[in-house]
Image (cartoon, rainbow, N blue to C red; front, side):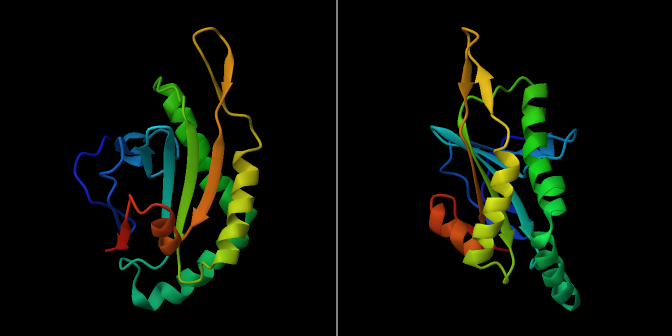
Length: 175
């Protein structure tokens, strides 16, 4: 679903993608496969964004401690990265192929994981895990001449402060 009005909320975080060429609320359109929350089109690449917030206001205060333990357990788990975060990436690729939206730009896949326990060391570790799962395949498209053209896929796992530092043109705040 192409977004025309900003800001837009996801998991108790508010984003402003008005500086983008366009932005899709991808998981509102893609109901066939697991998919990322947003696809943001820039002039030379797409940013695919998956948002997980273990500290949102919709989480009752009495459960936030358990949510923190759940968050840390998930970051230690290869299953979470493979069956949730990698599945969102692959599901988005499959949906775009199914709907004839051929990907011709490089992709930056960002998992925005918001928790007070998400420090720089944990972000680096999580980025390495997710990168290994996503980049093990070679991504490409076939051009009009039948040639395979590679697509660069990069991965970043960020928390909210790091998101705002890396993407000041797309500010995000807590709701």
